[in-house]
Length: 444
Image (tube, rainbow, N blue to C red; front, side):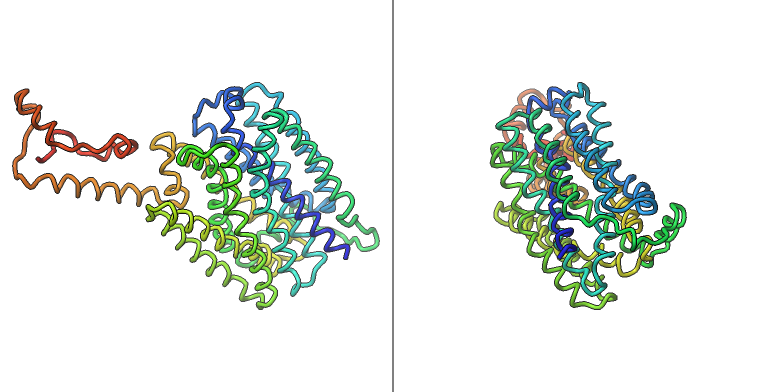
């Protein structure tokens, strides 16, 4: 019973941590917050806030986890991390510059970095090899629940206590609820069961020798890129592209992640029924279905189909959520399970860290309407489709078989030309004017 209490405590802690992670995604929509930190609707700077967090998180998971695993108990490591989360949240409103907030986001990432690695170590120490699927799936639900709760919760806090009060409320949530759960329900270290631990260097070296490490790492990078690209910009996309209110944006942004809850738990149940060597099948099935849904999303134009494929992608993405830690637990050396997962989670987050920033850059250049394409790596395909449409449109105008050169036309002819030529509407042309031919090339 105590081990399941520990799993529930870790689930709730992960939910709290994800509220912390996505609060910036909602706060950047608040004009007062944006003005205080000189964001000024600059999507690149807004994306940098999430990127800085993920960089700190990734390097911490990669390098700090072996230190904690070789010297401390997972309970001690988590309590120390929670204290730093609360402190960073409490001082964030006092910072007066964007640079200060970027540093605070890095610090928050460093503090949260070891969380999933220590969670993986706890499950590995307290559950048999044929039992680890369900606890991994249950704790993986914290990702979706944290995002589903985080968007509307931060929206509600900003509406009632402002963005400054929201930071203080989250600091108390971290310290009292998160810290209290770990203090009360996560088992304390047992002196009689302690064994000699390898040092940092040996633990780190053992972790790097985990079989299938490279393949698992590739799956983690793809999974986290989808997660952070989706969660970082979904609220802004709903507000700016579809003109929802701030309250509606918070609720709607939670829906895709709520739907992934069932698929995540289903993945855990399936993992307990599979042999260890069959676990990677969930990567293949979940990955292919997610990729297919995203591809269909890229090619869809109808709002109903966009919503359907966006929700389907999240459901299939959730199916493989528990598979990554399970595969690590099956293959990593027992003394370095947490560090092996730290390597995978750390490098995965470092690579995925640049997705919010790159999406902000693309949005700054081409408009947030291209959000759904870049999120899935489809910006090049989008431009190719637009080029084909542009070429077809102008080809249809060449039936008169007369080519005019504008700088040779008299004023009267130029006026007739402008009347006959149907230019694209402003909203059609915005963001891809660079793809249009010059007036010298037009055929009418």
